[in-house]
Amino acid sequence: MSRDRTLPTDFWTWEAVIDCSVTARLLFLGLWNFADDHGVQPLRPRTIRMQVFPGDAIDEETIRALIDELVARGLVRIFTVEEQDYLSVIHWEQVQRVGRRARHRYPADPAKPVPVEPTAPPPFQPAARDAADGVRVSSRWRKAIRHNLGRFWPGGPPTDLERWMARWLVDGYDLQRDVLPAIEAVWRAASADGKPLSGLQAVSDHLATHSSAQVGGSVACDPLAAGGEREGPVAGSAMGG
Image 1 (tube, rainbow, N blue to C red):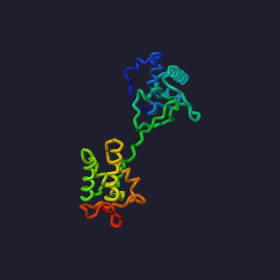
Image 2 (cartoon, rainbow, N blue to C red):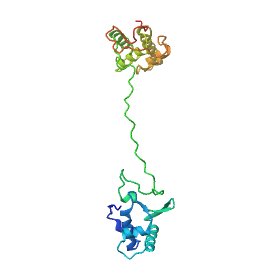
Image 3 (cartoon, rainbow, N blue to C red):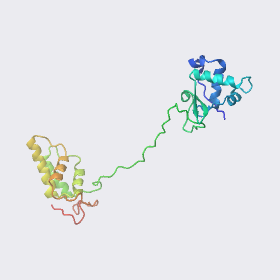
Image 4 (cartoon, helix red, strand yellow):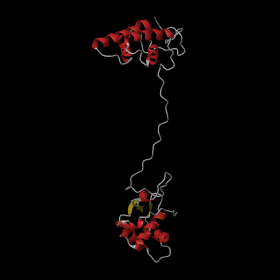
């Protein structure tokens, strides 16, 4: 089946085209109409003669000679698949638009690179929520920790204090036995080294290595705990202070 094809305006000044005979140029354009969407068609001189020169006194030998001329000029390529010869228009993709729906009616030219199909992005996966998300810190915890940080932390408590308090609750630390001593220990260590306190990560690290309250990993937390009635671990967890 023939197809309408694009003819670039600079076609007539291509060096390879200029070097061809007039009849070879016409044949070259005719091949475009009868090639598949990737510029390939069977090399059958009789069929090509009937397609491009149906009313001209040109025999099949002449057609084959014209094809060889196009090959010599670097305009078409001949390749063989299962004992059948095929013609491939070189630089087809630079002249014709090859869309996503372009079909291979004939075998692909092995000399041309295989197009890489775009891969679909992975499905969106919402970020996993931190275990401390939704945990409410009681006023007792908040007041005691802020008071201690006010003593030791220059400039007042860090802005991410609420997140750290919720994290300590989830991890099962006790306010009086673990958290408040850890804050003071970190401050004393920093003062001895002459280093400023930059954040609460140091407190969390100290808790992880010095606390005896957390055994066997994180303790389940009641996300509805508020106002000092219940805080952090569910009933049954040992919480002092």
